[in-house]
Image (cartoon, rainbow, N blue to C red):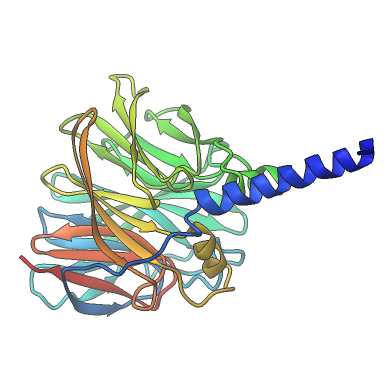
Length: 348
């Protein structure tokens, strides 16, 4: 065999191996077996409810919404933050940012109660760049406080408040374009990170993550959870006194985990994408649907956890599930581009 043919053969084997790895590692061959022991209680008409978090104390949900024609957004959008009452059973929505004049495509959100008000933070994407918008919420009034912008906001995805001055956020990419971004999405290149703001400065506290996505904080156990959908993992860290993170372990989930919510018992609830390539095509407007999955993860300590599939379907009812959060006997779910989101009621 000539040298030229050997080179062609070697390159062909590399390409075939890369394609096979990408297909397998993104769930392309996974068979979707529908599963949910319960009913859809209600569909709430609100487009692109990508992130939802609940106040169990005051009985409301805060929802991040924007009409994404394509995801990530490439044009200026005017989405909003909405409050949904969970105590009356009517699930009424209140648009909290109707007077917010800035370009607003809210992504990940976080809330923290301080006295009788809430601090609210939302990741925002605009054609001019990324920012974190800071509000205070008093009953049904949301007051804009300030915008935070920093060079560490490479591709911010989700955020979690630790207290009124400190927070963590994820960058889901290390590269915003070019071959680096391609290798992150298709080759699983692990260069995404977690940034910590200590009230004065921003610094990287975790890196080497394949697409760092959802993030949440367990204040009782001082644990931080980070979703790595490209790795099909939830990464677990302990939080040191100075805000640094110490890696504990990975929780294999077998699906493209997205946002993370934590219930009062400390269980993790995760919206997920079983087939990442299908989700990518859906988000680009090339496919009409994308499978959805909801997980409940009971994490007790290192090497002691369980992963339970609560809801699985092919996308015909809900496409591209991104978040799930329980409230009493209900599960409130969100998605990236549907015209409504679902409230589920599991059977007891």
